Each structure stands twice: as C-alpha cells, then as structure tokens.
Length: 160
Image (tube, rainbow, N blue to C red; front, side, top):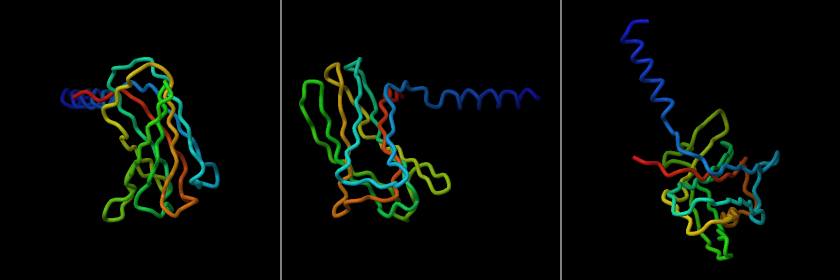
C-alpha cells in the first residue's frame, strides 16, 4: 500500500469510528406485531431510570414504518410522568414525508427508520424513574396502518 493510500485509509477509519460515540443511557423499541397497526387506545410505555440529573441529554423518538404508511406525518401525544408523580403532556408532530412525497428516514426496501429528536437539550430535574406513555392521536383515524415499531432513545447531548 502506498503511503498516501495508507494515510487516506487511516483517516477514513478514524472518521468512521468517531462518528457518533455518544453514550446511550436508554434504548427500547416496542413492536406493533404482525398486524402492523396502532390503535389510538393502545399507549406504548417506556420507563427510564435517571441516575444523573443536571446532565444534558438528547431524547429521540424512533419510528419504524412501512412504505404502505399512508400519511405525511405522525401525530403523537407523549405523557411524561416524573418521579414525584407530576405529569406533563406534549403534542408531537413528526413529519414522515418531504413536500415532494419522499419518505423521511433511513430507507431499506419497504421499511423506513426515522429518528425524531424529541428534545435536544433535556435535563432531568431529579433522580428516579420517568415514565413516557406514547399514543398516536391522528384525527379520525382509530387504527393506524403501516407501523412496525415505536421506540425511545436517551443519549448524551452532542457536543460540538
């Protein structure tokens, strides 16, 4: 291998390894099963144990869906319950298609994985278990087709 090729190879290897070395504190996905439908009455629950507060995190909602998903967005209600029992409701609007109709996310054949940054600078005020209940709230759509998984990821905030 020529010295210049070796340097390019070394640089690319280092660049790939250092792409995203953020620590993941929580990662869980819930499947919608073989039916691939999400009923409005079916809340998906995630429990996150927080051991470090006053630490900047990034919270991500992970959505895996099929190209058969017929809508331009996904409307969610996220109910956060803090360790002291206080509840906060958030309405979340996740775009699923670009204006030109292209699906948003990492595509593979007929499956798309979309990472939506729910909170890019999250700090938990106290230690303990935080519970997140997520339900789809698409208007006039009781049963949402073409959905495979919903997930949550809590990772260190990206430092630049």
